[in-house]
Image (cartoon, rainbow, N blue to C red; front, side, top):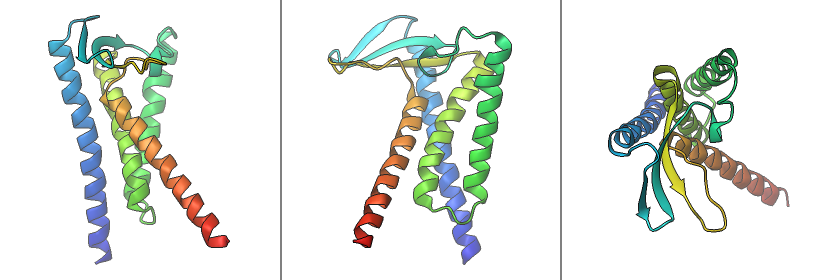
Length: 170
């Protein structure tokens, strides 16, 4: 029974991971084929705009001006090692609870989606932009959304766990 639960857990993790990668790649493909470079398409007034750009760096184009050797090391090799390490950790660690493994799978899926683009296309397609009037986001993609959802999910789990521990010690 224990082995079955472990297998089901791994299948759920892989399904979440593949859904995140698939959603990212499908939306990037649509953006690439239907949005011209620099074109602004207003989806929800001026709040949500589609604007396709190719990002040769990391988040907010950080590192795009680095020499090629450093870009390969920092934007391809290092992320590959980290993502493989995280994936092995959540798939092989029997003690990790699914409530932690799933948000980590979101982070890995987003990272793999962007890494795939960097390796095979030399840049990452970004196409979403939010304008909150007081501040705006940079242009991002669904892989970035996966990474943010996974990160926020982990933070919320930690806050809830901390609050629960504090309440039980009182």
